[in-house]
Structures are given as structure tokens and as C-alpha cells.
Amino acid sequence: MKYKNPILPGFHPDPSICRVGDDFYLITSTFEFFPGVPIYHSKNLINWELIGHCLTEESQLSLHKGKPSSGIYAPTLRFHDGTFFMTATNVTRGGNFIVHTNDIRGKWSEPAWVKQSGIDPSLFWDDDGKCYFVSNGSANLEDGRGIFLCEIDPFTGEMLTSSQKLTNGCGGRCAEAPHIYKKDGWYYLMLAEGGTEYGHMVTMQRSHGIYGPYEQCPHNPILTHRNLPDSPIQATGHADIVDDGNGNWWMLCLGIRPIPKVMLHNLGRETFLSPLKWNEDGWPIVGNNGMIDLEMEAELPGPVIQRVSFDFEDDFESGKLDPRWNFVRNPHPECYRAEKGRTVLTGGEDDLSTPRGAPTMIAVRQQAFCTEALVRLEGEVQVGSRAGLTAFYNSDYHYDIFITKEADGCHYVVLRKQVADIDVIVARQPVDYQGSIRFKLMSDEEWYSFYYEADGIFTELGRGRTSLLCTEVTHTMTFTGTYLGIFSEKGEIAVTFASVKNGNT
Image 1 (cartoon, helix red, strand yellow):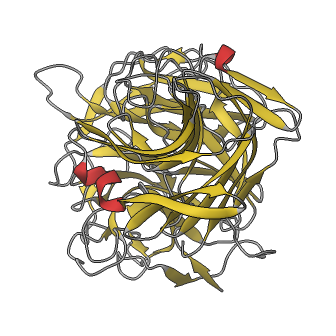
Image 2 (image 1 turned 180 degrees about the vertical axis):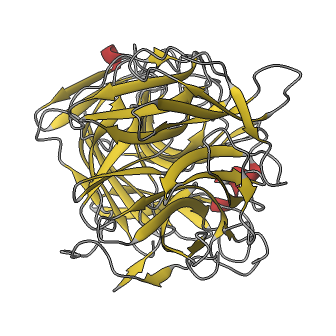
């Protein structure tokens, strides 16, 4: 049947997948956002349900004062002998680590730290039960950078052997994202190369021994869009593969959808799905000879029982925050109070523009070019406080509509733009505030437009270009995507309703 890509739109980079029976579990990177590493479940590889996160405690994930796009890089999810294992790199502090659980919907262990250097770690169990840890990096100055392997105790992180270099890659820069698989007597080593931008690609090597020597696939790269400037999908790479138990194989990879007509993207790196077949020589063929499409056709492992929707609505009646809400870095618990019917946000020391800060904000990923976000805020607005709705990339790039109260006792709705080192108020309008207000954000490929409600009618206050909230525009290397958030600065406000509706995903 036909299915649509991406299967997880919005900021969902570096996908990793494992299968347990007829259940599929998928995780992605989260960088400076908390909680860390979302876990999705599916029966058919198309309908994905968020069932939790691997890293939910500060003791598992410290992000304090981490720079934008630090934090959690490239997790790998594996299942062995009744236990789930997740390994990743916390580049903010600690390096490579492993956590585990017997209940993927429950709490995960504290991190077991691994001394092998580098990023993008992965785990592999051989037929004799030995567990191996593979990552990119360098064991010493003489070895140089490359892909390194050691035997490991996955529960403690103890390296049981020294790190040995497997390969420098297949000729592309930034050889990373190593995964090892075993099939038909071969050890397959899959890598991402070319950098995680428009030259990104996936390559494959294989060997009869886990330590090599590895031979390269004759038709490498097995996946890339680097020579397809007109494709709506770009930067494909950083992949994981899985068999579905029915004799079919699949690749999940990251990719981006640039804003039409410009090579910029604001939605982040997303998760795409492609069928994978093995040729008569035992090498993988991905999608359409190494390319993927927004719409593909394949025999899915389970029935598609409903239309895939990424719309989101929260009336806060549960008395706890929905797991789809994220924070920037570790949240300050005293700034959030979940109650039945509302969540109270109390501004702390940091605001949205505080470098490496933890502002009081709950946010969900923007998952479509065309969206409509709606929020209702209630409560007293304190003098000098700000509370509202934001399109947020990081502390240096965000657009905000908010309500504030000035010293004269009057209330105003304000549109603020923070772009690099420019922080400016672009619109300001007095409003008759009676204890409740609704804000709306509408986006398309070109604009974010901001509205406030007055006398039951939404009035546009202003707008900002999507191109200024794009990864390629930021003044530092960044790997995330735009969030739609609700925030409070220097005061307290209650959120009683929030929704995001997606048009053209």
C-alpha cells in the first residue's frame, strides 16, 4: 500500500528502531530539550504513538548551561534477552552512556558511562552472546579519527577489551552513525558520511569477521539525495534498518524538507521510511535505487487502522503535563504547577533569550509548514511580566506574542522578534484584559502570523519570516527544529487550553 513520508515529521532526527515480536519501537535525538529521547510504538511502521521517554530525570540527563544543539546526540535502541538498551552521547557532560529497562513504558536505569570516546554509539550482540560497543571518534592520536569497536558489559559500561579501529569510512567526510548487523554470515557496518547537511549519505561495508577487514558496497552510497537539488527531500542519512518478521526489510533515516524554492529548513530533521531489499550479491538496495519519496508503496507489516494525524489538543484536565510537551534544558520544578484544568507557569530567572538558559516554557514540535496554534491564558498579569505564545528555535531565534502590564496599569499585547543579536518590539497594542486572553499563531511556508483575541475576534498583530527560524541561518552549528511554545517571564499565568492543527505536513 501507499504511505506518506516523513513518518515522524518535525524535529525527529537520528532515528533508531528495534522490533520485539510484532511491535516496533523507535527513538530519536533530542539535543538540549527535556525529557530526553522520545519512545514511539507502532505495529505497522506508519502509525506511531508516543509512549514515553528514556531520560526523564535530571540524574539521567543533565543539560544545565549546555549550548544550543548540545545535549543528546544520536541514540541507538536495541533489545536483547528480555531487556531494552539505549545508548547515546550527552555532549553537554558525561559523554557516551547506556541505560536499560525491562519495561519500555516504565522508568529506565541510571546511566552507565562508557570510556570509549566519540559520538553516535551503537550496540551489537553476536551469536555467542558477546556485546559490542561501536562509535566514531579516536582511540589515540596515532589512530586518528574513524569507527572504533570494543567488547562491553552493557549493564555497567565496563569496556572488556580495548578499542580497535574498524574503518575510516568510505571516503566521505564525518564518518559517523555506525550500526552493525549480522546477516547470512556477514557483519554489515552501516555508516553516515558527508556531514549531516545537503551532502549527507548512507554507506555500507561488510566483513566475515567483526573486526574486519571490511569491504565496501560497490554501489555506495546506498542512500543519498546529494545530487537531487529539485527533490523535496534533502540531506538524507543517519539510518537504521530492521526486518519486520515477514521477510521484508526497512530503513529509517533522517532527512529534511526545505522550504519550497529556498534551501532552508525550519521544521528540523525528520524521520523517513523506505523499503530495503537485498540483491543477489548480498548488498542492500534502498528505495528507488538509493532515493526516497514523499509517497512510497510497499507491503507494510500491519494494517493502517486510521489516518495519520499529528494534531494536538490539551485541556489540561488530567492534572499532569502531556508527554508531548518539552522543556528547554532541565526545567525548574518550582516554575510549573500542573492542576486539573490548567497548568500554572511561573517565570524564573531565565527568559526566552537567556543564553544557555532554562526559560519557563512548555513546547511541542512544529510538524508541518502550515499550522494553527491556539492557546488560552488566564489569571492576573503582573506589572513587567510577559506571557504568551512563541515560535522558538533557540534563545537567539524566536518570535513571541505576549500580554504584559505596564506601570500605568494598562495591558498591552506585544510582538517581539529575536533574530541573532537583534531583539526588537515590532508591534504593541493596548487591550482590555479581563483575566483571560487567547493567542493564535498561523504558519505557512513563508510566514509566521500572530493574532490576539479582542471582543471575540482575532486580530493580526504582525508576522515574521520562516526563513529567519531556519537551521541554515543560525550563527552557530545547530541540529534542531522550531517548537511552538507557551511561556511566562517575570510573572505567573495559567494555561487552560492549547491546540495545534496541521495543514499540509
